[in-house]
Amino acid sequence: MENASAKIILRTDFERTDGTNPIYLRVTINRRTRKYSTKESVKEVNWDSDSYKVKRGDIKHLQKNLVLESCLKRANDIIFNHKISNTPLTFEVFEKAYLANPAKNSSSFIDFAINEIERDYKNKGSFETYRTRKCAIEKVKTFAKKDVEFSDLTYNFLKKLEAYMIGCNNCQSSRARVFRIVKTMLNRAIAQDLTSETPFSKFKFREKNGEREFLTAGEVKKLEELITQPQTDKTIKRALIPFLFSCYTGIRFRDIYNLRHKINSKWENNTDLYRNVKCN
Image 1 (cartoon, rainbow, N blue to C red):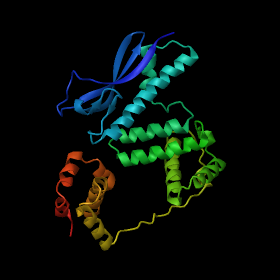
Image 2: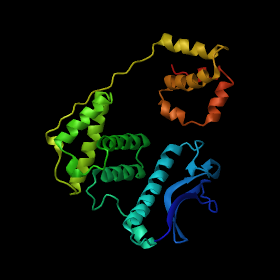
Image 3: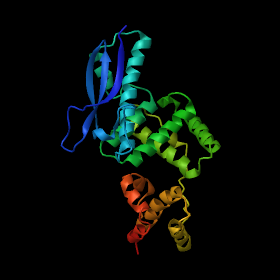
Image 4: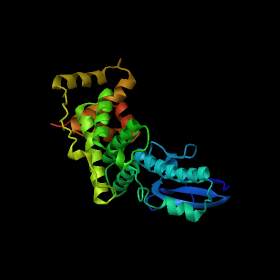
């Protein structure tokens, strides 16, 4: 039986014009190796050679690590399937499976949906959309406790999924988001002639706008005063400064979270600096 393994590596012998090094999937079969591009790159200083992941110093570390995780999982699944079926594995066989559309000739709705979500993201889609869609499909898989085929998506399946999410205390808007994503992916499958049935002709779900609470001017003022007080713990200051920056600028907190930490450290040493970014 072939001895095969897969590993994510950083190519340190080649540097791109932007100063980053390409990240590859290295596959070994019977002591022979081949490398496959993940289409991701990172500066060597932001590469963790122990965990084979992109460090938080890279502003897109979350997105890149998700792509690397997906590449490695796909490779390991191919190797595992050949081991349990006791069939020969060559690089030609591996490449045919690895480079092919994983949803092609498959009855799995989960495989199809994940492939569509990853394809959209690679085609310059937003990370927030990618994350939201993938979480929704993972929730469906968690509920089913198995792979979900197109034939599984019936009216009764969706009703049970709805009851499951209610039991998990998911609000109406969260439940509607999951159903909307499932419906979108199912419509794509129908357009590609992978299935012809849809339970959404009978199953209806209601959208609901989320209710948001806003801080008053007085509450924001109290937070400003809390930062300037010497007895305020540094941990609280580190949390309040980006939060107030979000209040003043309208930038999402997740985007502020991805800012370089050295910017935050400058603010920590000058408690008056944050006032200069306040908007009228």
